[in-house]
Length: 113
Length: 114
Image 1 (tube, each protein chain N blue to C red):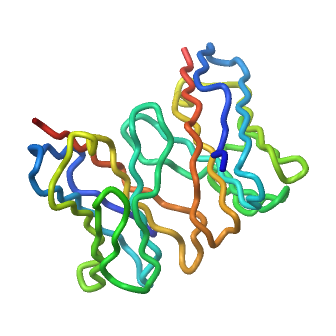
Image 2 (tube, each protein chain N blue to C red; image 1 turned 135 degrees about the vertical axis):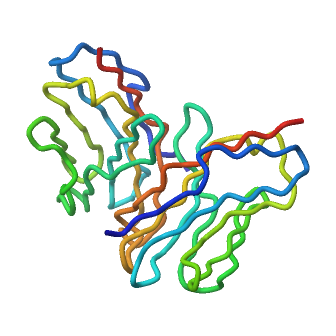
Image 3 (cartoon, chains in turn orange, brown; image 1 turned 60 degrees about the vertical axis):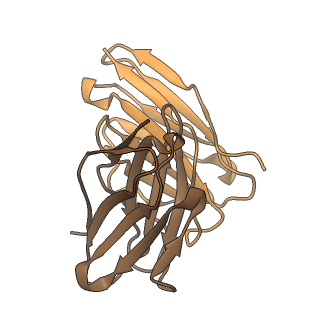
């Protein structure tokens, strides 16, 4: 069974630029999560989707971050404009249902200069 | 607020020695609890999970953890460390009765010396 796929693996941008990350969850998984992991910290949930609907985006900085999950499969996370403090690893995870174990992708490491 | 605290950001052991990584949670209701491992440049891999069944949970790679409600703890142990165990370990909890909305501790980096 293929795991959670993410791209790109690495991205370097200048502050005030825009960036987008892509996630393809495990086939059939209805629930998808985006986490932000700042160096030296544990992952922090940004947004949770159930199929193509948002379940929880209370920790998403909505003035600059946006996410969508069209057709309930792939998802994109966008930052516009980026700030220095957005430098982090962005992890995508999926689960069959909200009540099931989450499986994580390899992450996208973002560096904002 | 629901939180997870991992005691010790770095733990160093010799190969063959006992591994003990500490985790405490705050909650008025026992949550679901998890240990994940993260190898460099990789995502998180589930080691084991507690879901209110047996208090002693066995996971992959010889790891186990014991849920102690009286101490609000969920410490991770392995009797004999292997070089391949060197990684960062995260304790996490879910909110209430759902696996979703994980709250993670800050992580513990395990170093294994030959």
